[in-house]
Length: 344
Image 1 (spheres, rainbow, N blue to C red):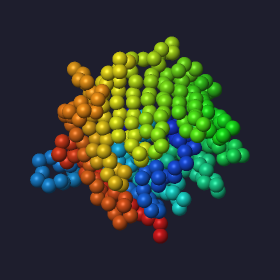
Image 2 (spheres, rainbow, N blue to C red; image 1 turned 90 degrees about the vertical axis):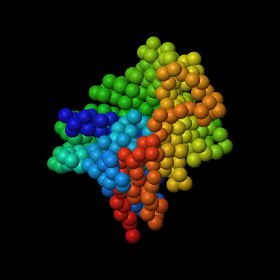
Image 3 (cartoon, helix red, strand yellow; image 1 turned 30 degrees about the horizontal axis):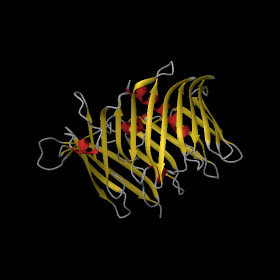
Image 4 (spheres, one colour; image 1 turned 45 degrees about the vertical axis):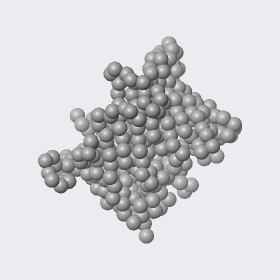
């Protein structure tokens, strides 16, 4: 049952990776790694309760500290990927990911993904297989045009039957303007993209089939991307009684994530703080039952957060963390250790 859930989630991750394959970041940048990392292996432990010192207990399968490896602008399925536990990642000398392994350390079951690139460094294929048996689950093929832009992404099951297909379109400036996700030639999802005169993306529309489901708008300042608003729509095209606003700092790090009702009343708030290495050191959230006025910074500073999650880090000489401890309200809950290997 667990493996079926893993495979279903991972199939969705493959689709997201089809979209993300067009981003310019390599694996080192994506995972906030310094210097030429060859691989790393990561293990998460539950802290033993009622101990005078922080003592590692049982190895954990689910990583609840899903801020540790990537920035906090994750999609739903990227978050699911981290919750499964990225046990190991391998990179080539250009920083591109060549292999990921997700597994339950208690049962040794999980998924392995391999990535293949062409001479230009473009991802052309990635495959997922069973961690223990190497039996193939999915295979995804990427196709590019003469300008190096991805125009198609196809995912096949273990019987080589086409499961999903993504098709991309671009404008004359090379900006992606449309993505269609097809299941057996039936449109599952469509995304359209709008840009300003500087080629900054200012809007993304997400459709469930042909029906608008979600609209994202982006605002920029002289330092770059600072603000994102997400609105949701019903099948009739009416805006729902909810929207989300995400705010970023000058380093494009998520610092505030807020839910609002249609009456512009905040119903949930999440706040993030970072250290100089761009790692999250504090996360706190508050949902409203009897809603107070969160809509001014003064009142936000007065919010009584019930649970505050903090992280401490130990770094190697290259500035990559090799150990982090997660605390909730000052009590240690998890220890994550990471063994990193570098290219010479």
